[in-house]
Image (cartoon, rainbow, N blue to C red; front, top):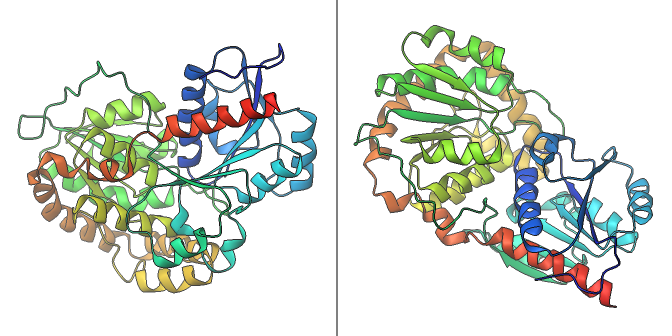
Length: 403
C-alpha cells in the first residue's frame, strides 16, 4: 500500500499513548514499525506526550511534542498546528477526541475493551473516525453491549512484533535441559503511581526461591525497576543461580522469552500476548492492578491453563478489588496499590512462603502441559493486529490526501 497524491513533505502521523504501563507504547512501536515497512515515500511520526514510552519509541519517532495529560484544548491546538494527515491513539479516549477536534481523523486502538464500565465509560471515543478493538475471548455482555454504540468499529488481532517467516524457534524445552527462566514484571507505572519497587520486592523472593528449587540456573528479571534495587532483592540467592536484569528492547524481550524454558509474567495483556506468540510455558504472577485480574482470566480462558498465582487474601482480597473496580478503575487500582504496599510492610515473609509454595506445585504442572496450550491466546486473538492497524492508518491518511 502507498499513500498517493501526497505533497512532497510526505505523510504526517500524530501518535499518543496513555501513560499506563508499557503495553500501550509497545503496541505503538510495533504498529509504527509496520507503517514504516509498508509506506512508500517519507513518513514523519510526531508523538504527543507518551512519556512512559520514550525508551520504547525513540528509534521510530521523528519529533516529540509536550502534553501534560490534562490540557486537551492545548493538545487540539498543537495537533492543528502540525498539519497531521492522521492520528493514532492507544487507550486515551479524551486525546482521540482532541485530535478529532483539530480536524485530524483519528484511529483509536482499544487494547482493553473489557476495562470500561460505570463512570469510565466516558473514556471510549464512540464517534472517533476509526475504533479498533482487540479481539479478546471472554468479553462480557456488558462490554459487548456498550460497544454496539461505536460508530465505526473493527476488531483486530494481537499487536505483536513482526518476525521473518525464515526465523524458527530454536529454544530447547526444560525436559531437554533448558534451565533458563524469565521473570517479566511489566511496566508498573500507572496514571497515579510511579512506584517500580514495591511489587517486585513483595513478589520476587518467593518466585526466585521456587525457580531455584525447581532447578533453574539462569534467571532473567525484566522490568522498569532500577538494577541496584533488583540486585538487592535477589542478593540472598546470588550464589544459587545466575541473574540478569532488564529493561530490554522490544526485540530482545521477545527473543529472551522465546529462549526460556519458563516465563513468570505479571498478567499484563501485551506481556501475555508476546509470551503466547513464542509458545513459551507461562505462569501468571499475582496481578499488580485492576486490569491484571481481568487479563489473567482472559489468558486462562484462552489457554485453559490454570497456572496463575493468587495473592494471599490478607494481602490483596480479590473480592474487594472487584467491588472497588465496580466504582471505577482508579478506585480499584488505589486499593491494589495500597494493599501491595501494606503487604510488603507487614506480611512480606508470609507472602514469600505463599508464592513459593504455590509455584512448587505449579511449575511441574505448567511444564507438563502440551506445547500448543501456550499459543492458545494468540490463536484466539490473531497475530495480524499491527498490519491491520497500519492499513487503517495509511488508508485514512490516503483518503484525506485525495479528498
